[in-house]
Image 1 (cartoon, rainbow, N blue to C red):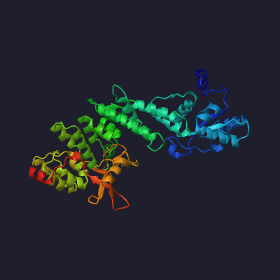
Image 2 (cartoon, rainbow, N blue to C red):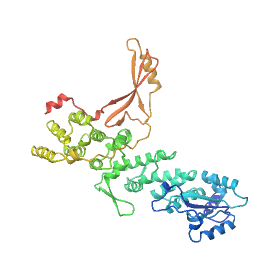
Image 3 (cartoon, one colour):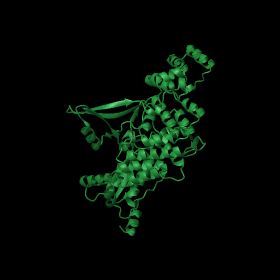
Image 4 (spheres, rainbow, N blue to C red):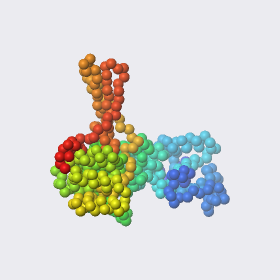
Length: 468
């Protein structure tokens, strides 16, 4: 396509020149699409706003359709020969108009929007058909334009918005900047769900990965950041809790787990202290701390103690509280303290519990508040609803089958997750699929194997009892 024609085509956007149709924006009839402040108006002529009847009459005289009482914004002069190949939505409307309306009538293409602000996003998506370029640049506007581009089926616009959003998130940015992370956090409610459209999962994963990298690289002392608009500050912990969305999902993703390991001690403390940091059980948060300590073995004892003080022991599962915690030699809780802690956690709030805690303090045991009174974290995980695919290599299966013999008739094969993870983490436990093959059976057995991760560094019960 010549540059002259490209310039001509771009100049037609919003122009009456060669226009043979009009785009009108109207309030969506789907209440779920609406902005809260945007009421639904009735379509009856008696309730049409002032001037609407005159506009209807003028439109009818021109061969067009009546003006909708819920119309928002100004009509956009358009060109069917541009919109038809550029948008599946407009192509469908134009085909219906041709079949249903009198010959020679001017097509009126209606675009439903949730509120007046969406008109600008729809215009950005339509402008892309004419120019091949985006006219918006902020994260909120890109997400709005992306949503309308998906709805209108504008070829290439969704991908262009994705690229703009990933650029804001700081992919390959040098030097690292927190500005993009804060901007995306401010409009996080506008992000698509991972299954909204074909490119949504890659976009959301890409944004989170880039934001995780920015946060892992951040070693500054500032713990609050100004949101766009300058009126509200967001704590570092909330940025971290959004980017690292749920302890079990982070632990099940080798890349995200590695980025957690790169966080500074101060950043990890902010994450663990944040009430918005989600998990399936506090056991997964304790495991996350164990993974970080394993990746940072030179952590000073006072820092380690401070981080352990962020774990909400009162929210641990019984298995972790009674079966795992007593075997963590690195956790700053001595064997004599354990029965006192178990007793305190079983007691209801009241004077009896207060007396016990006072006795504990008099004995020289200083327990952080989170251990005995921390509220439960949000119960969710970032990969909820997503599939963790696993497989066994054909070569490994062939090798195993050749090893079968009468003396050794059974072989076990460990699966590999497509993500590269060794396990999927749930409630502090590592899960993986294993396959049992027996030479005397016609079918193989598939099992879900549960284990405690090695990063916990569990010591035998006898060793911990000797420490007491």
